[in-house]
Length: 71
Image 1: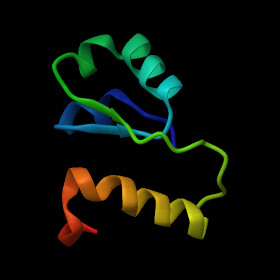
Image 2: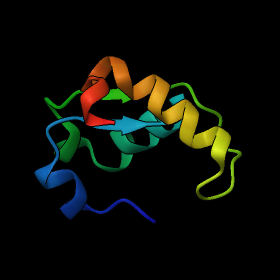
Image 3: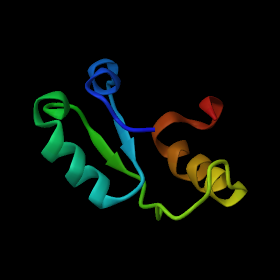
Image 4: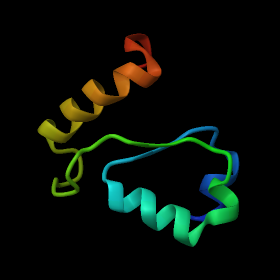
């Protein structure tokens, strides 16, 4: 899925997997990301969709930000 202005418009917090994703978002959508936290989870963008290892990493890294009850 590609990120759109609409996706960023309603977001309070933006999570990305890699540092380069932060850089791209800030470059391409400067106005839409201004003032919003963009959090890099430091997960390599090398996994297939719904890969079990990826899901485990996402749960682990998001727990600090969203709480265990949200996952």
